[in-house]
Amino acid sequence: MRRRLVLTALAVIGLPLAGGGFIQQGKEPQDGARLFSQILQRVEESAVDSLSRAVIFERAARGLIKQLNDPYADLYSPEELASFQRNTLRNNYGGVGMQIENQEGAIMVARVFPNTPGEKGGVLAGDRILFVDSAAVTGLRIEQVSQKLLGTPGTEVEIKFQRAGVTEVIKSKFKRAVIRVPAVPYALVLDSGIGYIPLQSFNESAAQDVERSLIDLKARGATSYVLDIRGNGGGSLEQALEIGNLFFKPGQELAVVRHRGRTPEIYKASRNSVVDSIPVIVLVDGYSASASEIVAGSLQDHDRALVIGTTSFGKGLVQTLFPLDGGWAMKITTGKWYTPSGRSIQADHDRLGDERFVEYADDPQNPDTTKRKRPEFKSDGGRTILGGGGVTPDVVVTPDTLPTADRELARAYGPQQSQWYVALYGMSLQYKTSVRPDFQVQAAWREAFWNKVQAAKINVTRAQFDAGIGLVDRSLEQWTARLAFGDSTAFRRSIRYDRQLNTAIDYLRRGGTQRQLLAQAQASGSKGGK
Image 1 (cartoon, rainbow, N blue to C red):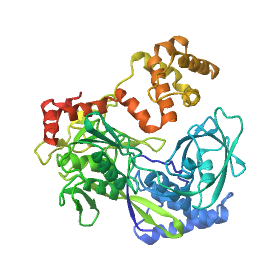
Image 2 (cartoon, helix red, strand yellow):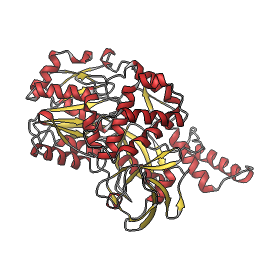
Image 3 (cartoon, rainbow, N blue to C red):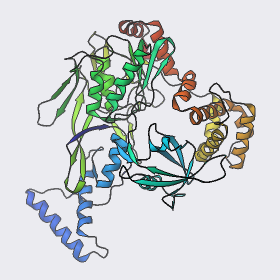
Image 4 (cartoon, rainbow, N blue to C red):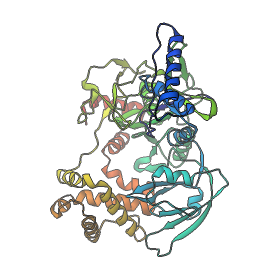
């Protein structure tokens, strides 16, 4: 296995770090080795509940990694490495092709990926998994069920499902195949010839998926693009650079990576752009990180895209995955990356208890970080852009906030959110087979949902429910559309609620060229908020 550069901001899998310690060296290296040897001997000989030597060494290694003061460092066993690659890098894996969720102990199919054994076998979102190879899965953790479903491509697995409206248990056999989770789940041409590309991850096919989408949308009449990387926490550095290649001319700088004691690595575009001078807007938010920020930062530096949304996460560090003997691997931070203008977008973060990170300095109610003193840089065209804490959009647009009544309803069911979700999911399953793509939420649906809320003993009053009917309708609409017609249809119906995307659409309708888009942003003083 070769070394792999990885850029992730949020821990996708929470891997527990076992105990163990790192003994700091004394004046001579051998002093530390002697100390560790003595401790090992005493533990083996005298500890009441001693451990095997292999376990002791593993825990010591994990302790050393933990003491590096590197929040992104980790040690992976072969099993943990496979999970990390599947969940973070989203490497190809052997399986059926289903995304599953645990709903109060019930294992439900949330999504079926296209062109997989699951789709070909007729699995539907909303099916409940009862058995995998005769083993009951109700009450098991998601990780346990996933391990039962995964396996060598070509091997068979038998699954028993329960489906709403079907009295008999559905029993199906699947031949596992290599599953590729698309980085771009769909690409759409919106009104006014606007091509929309939601880039959800930087897996090993991300650049290929984006390129295919750009070319396909252009053939379908797209005259401008929106690249949506909101919520995209990063992944492969190589894929981020390849995506940059799609927008620039050969020789234009994409990023610089600086390692300790090594010559900086300068990455430049090496191929012709596939979109020429077509206007581009990039959508970002506080969960857009690392690889996402490389793409957004380079496009902003070269005035190749207008960036809209809220300030990105701010992760300018590079991790390298080093293979070790026995299928183990170690991930540590090995460098920092900079945008073409010389910006570092690394922000100060603190670690929360669940392995997520939060930025120190920002007021969460005010995502406009331009109000802080940050270093200023210049784009190719002379625009002022900011470094030192994420990619600050050219047009700062916060998401729509819920009306007061909707917020009150959300607060009321918040402590019982899982029960609310199960009731909502059940309602959507009930209606998904009887609706048309242009359906509207009916009064009878609301009443039926209220009955489910009561049956689940969710602490919501009828007055709160009725006052927050906007949130109820929106939730029923989105889940029913998703289960009945898929993600792209649900997305089209949600556009009217998306303030950031609607701002992008408005800019593209008024500006026919990239220069006009940037001029609009500067004329409106957009960094002050919108």
